[in-house]
Image (cartoon, rainbow, N blue to C red):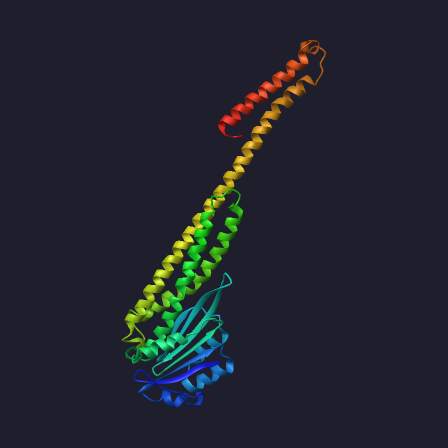
Amino acid sequence: MLINCVAYQEGKKLADISVEDISEYVKRSDCFVWVALKDAEADELTQMQGEFGLHELAVEDSMKGHQRPKIEEYGDSLFAVMQTVEIIDGELSVGEVDVFVGENYVLSTRNRCQQGFLGVRSRCEREPHHLMKGSAFVLYALMDAVVDRYFPVVDALESELEAIEDHIFTQGSQRLNIEQLYQLKRKVMILKHAVAPLLEAVSKLDGGRVPPICVGTQEYFRDVHDHLYRINTSIESIRDTISTAIQVSLSLVNIDESEVNKRLAAWAAIFAVATAFAGIWGMNFEHMPELKWEYGYPAALGLMVSVCAYLYYRFKKSGWL
């Protein structure tokens, strides 16, 4: 679906144009065209390919979707893939933004994204001195908007982790904590898969051999790279904390099981003594002096109770009971 199709000249909006007129404006050296699509169909991308002269491999990747974040160079044009990560009903929703960039054009198409980028266009139009830098600055603005939306996700994941940590030492909640930690770890990995490849790709735009389109705008992409580096560092910190929290929870489970085993062992020892005495006196051999003793029965019971009580005292004192 077509969202906007606008021509710009010297950093200012020239006119809203029709799709059929795109190729005419792209031929002009004093302006560039910025087109935005949402959930583009194959026929729309095919039409855009004809108007902009897009590389067929880039168009094929955009049609297939579900691409790994990347920035690829096709001659004098760039094809960038970014993943958007949004929180919807407590779960992470992953979308995709594909950007085709040429000397005189920018084509952006977003898929499975709840948030749009009208604010990015408005920001660029309010800063004509920046928009004069051409399509490279538009690529930066779109990339910066995608990256900035990662920060609230990181904050939400950190808050979720802190909430779990508050209950990690609560008795009887270890199993639930472990389940929640593994769910949180899955969310962190979703964000990691969006950030890490993009961090690597953006590094190609601010150092070394920079694509001709991005010459003169390296400092902007360096700023994006710094933001991605900070986010990636936060993700690694969250992952390490989750791993530590899981180990602590598992240790607490083992400690609880050890406590139960000690109690069972202590009671088993106590009853084993009583069973041993009862077994001996229960054999009823003929030559057992206490069988004919008046106080033999209560003495046997007293001895068993005394020994069991002593064992109970010792186990209690040692913390096993």
